[in-house]
Image (cartoon, rainbow, N blue to C red; front, side, top):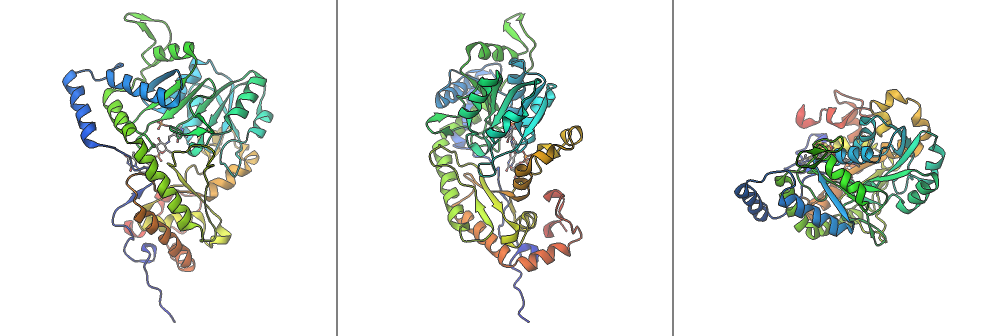
Length: 418
Ligand code: T4K
């Protein structure tokens, strides 16, 4: 009987990668420029509260997005909460379930019921045709999500919101540097919110920005991020502390300086993954629409278990063993997470596309820490895993934790951890 070379870590071989490859490894830009900015902040002893670097960061975001106002904040989750409050939303707001849980939490945190809408299985964004049926007398708004930086049909959602007298806002956490045809994302609806978390296309350690063309809304938000102050001793509304600090702005500006380079690497890797995986049955790289502008930050793959001979979770477990830390974003969907799972246990019945995409989706490492060689090795590794599917399945089923479905990948005891 022919013996199988255990060249996969899941089969007992050494890991293919000597270091861990991450989906969200930060893009940093020029260390020298960053350290010079930080030195300047320390010299000037102005660390936060609308400092010069935050102001410069806001100007760069505003100009790049072509909007009138940008308000830098501590993170996108708080940015969304502020917009929701500033617009006086209440009752119910319609949003997709296929998003990071922060989108839903931002609503629930301020006492609004998130009403989950299904997605288009091709684009992964909320299906505008399904939104209208979810509008009730309690609906006050729609929150679109430009998932993976893909425009979520903003013009159609605008028309719908206008027809029903609803507010329209966007979670644009993934969408900095992206455009719907020629119009930059950030310029739609009443306001949009970018994330500049460490794992994002452009990062400021933690951070986010609210962008809007509405002068009154911008004034209100500026005051809300700073405890409601409108003058030195005057508080004119309820506020919180959501101010970005100067170090974050320095990281953000340095990241912006490198934006062209980051995007080019992302795009190059995206096309290399497309080429490298094209011939593998059951593996499909989600395509970006070339008529829009993308930052190519997320490499999204769908796995067809029947064609590949392995489930998504089996492939994920095998890749992790080889140090490729792929992610199952955004499995299992917000509606399957608390508190939504308990408060609305039957909502999954109207989300067939969300459920099916959640079971198939896997994100691959990208960004400036991932070279073309890494991409080629990842593609080869996926090919090898699928070629040895019977051995992989049997290795995983003989594993102390036999069930992979329905448990987090981080809970699977991979060989290195055994
Ligand atoms: N809306 C959407 C659609 C979003 O995706 C997000 C955030 C938000 C709203 C809210 O934005 P913020 O409030 O965060 O500004 C991560 C991020 O924490 C989160 O910001 C992001 N989305 C989400 C997609 O990813 P986790 O729980 O997956 O993070 P974690 O710690 O598992 O790290 C992700 C990967 O990045 C890992 O593979 C490790 C790697 N990593 C991470 C960090 C922090 C690094 O290599 N270096 C690092 O410094 O949520």
